[in-house]
Length: 273
Length: 188
Image (cartoon, rainbow over all chains, first blue to last red; front, side, top):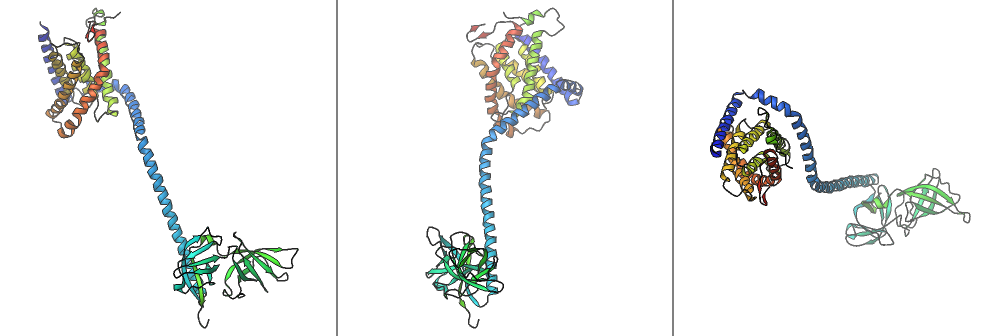
């Protein structure tokens, strides 16, 4: 038999076998044999599949590494934006609170003509630590007027333009304000100087004056530039100088200038107040 | 020295020769890898058909009916290990082995381009044929989804697989059959 004929016969035989197998499969007759073969190779297939799927996952992770880095960077940006947003919301809430406090001060002092202004600039390079507000002469603001915030003295107006005004905060070393320390039974005059630090110094206190730590300090009418009775802070320490008959006190201010967003300028007092 | 396992086991003719067993194990291993491992590693959206490539390489390499046996056995293993109806790949691979062996029977077998061209052509024929065979058995086949997108990638990956499988198939054929195989460097 020639090779070609033999191959054709084998081919026909195999085709017939394949067709028969297909028919057996379709009728379900081959299922037990198929099941037996698959049961035998199942452990090998299972092991191969486990290894392959693990390797595939590792490869996929490797491929995703760059993508994950980009995603990570994008998420970092998003987190930063959300944090900034949260901070802005917090600032807004804080600002609202300060507005409410300012309005409360207005309610408590109906005789005072107050102009509410927003801080729009801080001249941090200026040795005077000037604060700029968005109200000026057009709002009736004049140099020397007292500026309050959060229920306490924040500073006084030192310069006015039509639309803005500069404020010298009480904590500035250039600031000097006439004040009264209000004890339980008596008061003591003095001058309150800024130190550029957190606390203020009340100087020139009479040695005999009955003041104590915790006493409130308010503006006095001495000098005439500021209305009397504006809260400034409270005494946290009293110092006695051996070379002087006068004493000085450390005053914790009510207003922290660095936290200010909104202030009120006391324009004057209403008639009849 | 080359051992001729095929002739060494002629004593017990009722048993498969060691060469046949080695070929069967090789095919089984390829079928397992093809159906259990390669699906996790698609290349260009396609998987190499190791059995098809091996059958075609063998068919271009030898004169005789062993490639038909490889085609039938390999196809049967693929049918068993995959979701294909039994007999589908067995029939297709047998036909492809016959055509590949007969079509390239008269050409210079030392030419390395022969298996490359044969694998590419076989792949191009196999994919639509397999879809047709499945459709004839009542299985819903999405021709548009499968054929245009997968045929060219399949040809490329099968050519890649042929570069990997050519040498092992040649060694196996030489080891099991014992006949010298023509190569591009001469008869070895």
